[in-house]
Length: 63
Image 1 (cartoon, rainbow, N blue to C red):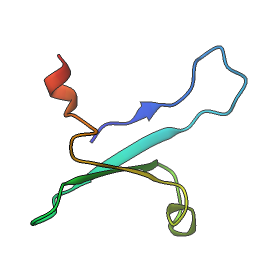
Image 2 (image 1 turned 90 degrees about the horizontal axis):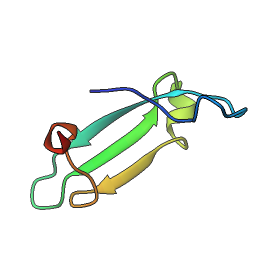
Image 3 (image 1 turned 120 degrees about the horizontal axis):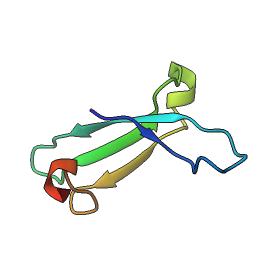
């Protein structure tokens, strides 16, 4: 897994690191969930984004 800085270095907005997990579903498209690295259990209930297979690619495939 990789972490990413989510804002521009010149920005005045707060920055945070993200983490992700890919969930492999049997009989359905895989899903990638992206969430704040430092989120506690309560924050994880609402502070995440998910994408279905086809809307994301492996980082290694972009080199």
